[in-house]
Image (cartoon, rainbow, N blue to C red; front, side, top):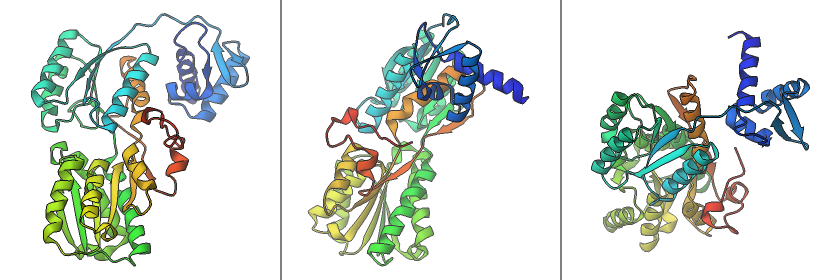
Length: 375
């Protein structure tokens, strides 16, 4: 695209960010709504201000001086996993909040109970005649069937975490998140166990499908990258079914027949990581395990702060930010703009050393207000 035309297109995106008369937005708000780099947005705002199309309100807030055209209120179908886990709760609430802020009507259905419910909900959203669907359901094997219903109806889909054929994907970069955790625990073993581990325990959730299993593959690859010798260490796979209780039972059974030895535990989510820790502690072997989780949930962050915890760290997915990204994608799709086939969430390693800096509100505020400061 010609640079001058591109600048006009970006300036238009800034002007269209104002959704109602007299709306006052911060530079940060405009950057979030347009996806522009902060420096680019700031430069264009100065130009628009000089031309009288934008006026400054205070030091860093802006208001458009032109008439904001009335916007169609889109109806968005949202098939959610529910709020039975901290991750699902954070994603669901963030989508609901972002949709409300974007002036969209959200038709929410809960698809976590069974594949049959998920399919029935997809068909109901088609009947509702929604403009776009956000699928956040966990039945990976059902994704092609659900996606076909929307394709036939001509309804665009954004799929969160579980890919759906023909849908725009938003979610974790599972393998990259795994690498981050694997490298980190490898360095910990090198520094604290002199690089020696006698056993590796991989705990995954079979029902989540192959994409989520990439977290485990990434963690194992990252561990071996730092400690090549562990390739020859006994490695055991286990289905923790995504649950603290189920993982605790499975690890408990294993420990009854396994001799005490240094064990690296790589878990696909924090609940399974915590279940493994409880089983090792119950057996009096807490010092024999080093655990890496995924998601950096509040429960995991509390565990990291506990003296003597075997939880080395957890990789953050920041589900509380999902809604802003997903609704931004929805606006682009409904506005006829091109979007990439996949957009990935940002990941960061959270450990005892940085957890208070990233999540300073954990100690003083309830869970739903514990918001990170980085990114």
